[in-house]
Image (cartoon, rainbow, N blue to C red; front, side, top):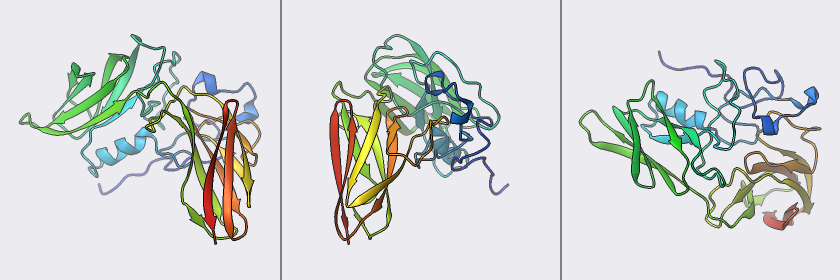
Length: 270
């Protein structure tokens, strides 16, 4: 065997909900709002899901370990089909969920994996098909996975940190220079001051552009009200995306605004 075929690598519009379940708090009652397949390694905004980590480790492009956590506050378990591996996310920031249990997944090519919460070992497993699942009580701080070879020697480790209390709206361009008329992609993220994502931040973000045109927005949810050709978007686990067409030579200024304020990013055009 020299390769694998996955459906899908990059998510797509169509086959709405085919094997890709969605969390209840992101669902819509209107059937027409379900517009994507939802079975993907990379979502429509270009964000890599934990399934990318698993696929790379399963095919020995990396050894791991890599962590993924089922969102602690989510009580409904979307039914996973053969088209999707997991609904876990790469975050250890779930304020208000202290003491609640959740599933932590570790992807690794290793003989043994140990999981630590704030320096205390909370379990060890032998990965099955490069994956180990732990049931863990959420506590803010650090979540660390350590992988070991058959001789007990450490191979590597991966850590997720809890974000701080302060919250920032970030607007991050994919590139800082462009040509007139070029399409520009900017990621919207709610983080702490160190850039740690805050997946429980739910906001509706609107956009304006100077020397450019806002031509679309998107998020990672399989439900989306309206279409992608609009200038505002709700966040999905703390993130979203805006697409802007560059204007003439000069400076392009894109502004993202929510109910608490705004932030501006500049891109040179010439």
